Length: 298
Image 1 (cartoon, rainbow, N blue to C red):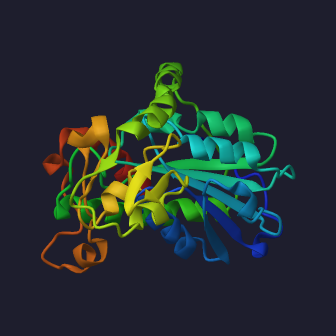
Image 2: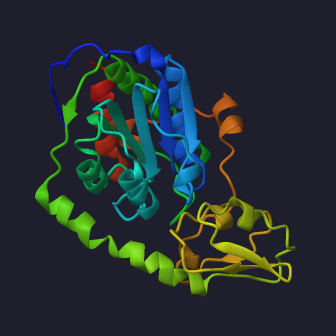
């Protein structure tokens, strides 16, 4: 992203901000809450659910945020549809943020589709990616979790200041990254197919937490057991939060991470260092945190 000269004052910024968030297991919602603290203005956070009609419009807010977890280097389909549903056309300021388990630059191509949809409806100020703990593939250590969250909080506050100053940044993802993201949109189709392979095992006690949590209404309780439909978007919220680890996610079962990260306890534990030296980080994460350090040192 290339930084440009601020385009002027944000007229009516005192009207406040509305942040629309799709969050599978809670990481992206945590980032949204940090934006609420950092922006310093009245901020409402709204969860993106299947029924867009019940969501408040951005009318009456001078600033809009959209946040989501990156799925296969793309915006989740529900967020893509939500961007199309937004009717705002007065050019008010909008910022985008997304989360993922690694800091690959491919993540910065994930918003290409919704940027195209939102262009002309809003003035898109900028976009940020935040590395947060995986809920698929493998489970991060408490030490790595604290490192991630510490940097996330600092970076959000830097971005919030730029937002409030009205600084506009243009995104220039490399064409090859855009192409890879476009190819991987097959995940949208696969997510629907995946639904029929999900099932609850004998450990299920019929608590219905999964059905109540599903943002798509894709899980129904039948004879005390969850039954999965074909509108899954692979947020894995139900599996991640299941108190009995009773739900198989089919073909992706081997990648499942079950149970929440205890963020509050981890952040309060003085025996865990706040950050990890770059040289001690896994190689995959070093470029992201080098960029983060440069940004924070400006």
